[in-house]
Image 1 (tube, rainbow, N blue to C red):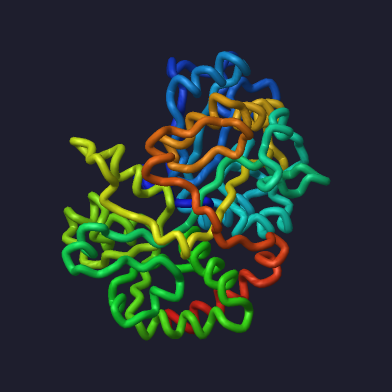
Image 2 (image 1 turned 30 degrees about the horizontal axis):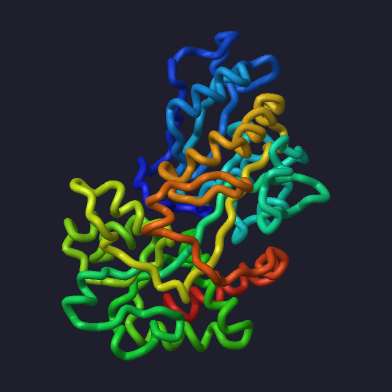
Length: 362
């Protein structure tokens, strides 16, 4: 999410996945992207997911067959894309978010292209409008989630704000992701920096550490192994009722439950949310730039934008795009999320992560 590890747990690791409704080869029989190729390759993080009928619509509309290369967590995927930019693995990269955007742009990862649907993207999500190197695709809020049943059983009010998390009654209850290796972990760190400022965020983390915060490498471990409120956490007999995840995690817990509950088993501490935006871009030196452009056009279109919520558990950025009722009921966007100017993130991110690592992990 970029924005990202999302609530949907997908296969971890490096793998080439063909997302084609019919499973046929490209129109020219070519297996890879290139001049004249009818295959367009998307490189993304592991949380990419899209409905088969939407892929089929793209392939019919564009004449290109879509292949997707899932390449780890968001940070890992971005770093690898930068290292291979002279000989890219695909034509389009999806999944760089506002926490890592400057790294991608400064390293020349993308070439300019203004997607045909860009004018329909809500103004608050637009960036780089002079060069159009990236296209906004989705948004989501990184927030602390809580296990409703645990807090009800303990007769304890769940935390609502960053300040609450350092109170004695919440000692040893929170698990967070490593800000150096995880997109939501970095988002949470930036949220604390936005809340307490350059001079205050380190003191806050000292208090959080003293209050027993647990740090793990990534979202999947934190949410599905350490958090007592998730379906996976229940099976793992997890004992932490607070976790850094997403505002869209509660509707996922409802949608994937069998039978579906009337209410979500988890809640969101809205005073801890940091807004992420994910982007896609046409890779520099892409072998099939025309196919890449067609894919970016499609990703800003209504059908793709309205398909994303129930597949990747993110919100669309297209004006007027509809979201599922489950999102409205169980996972509304935060009313006042913490945000930060991308330029400030670019200026401070690496030093903040370095300071955070020394402070929290040592």
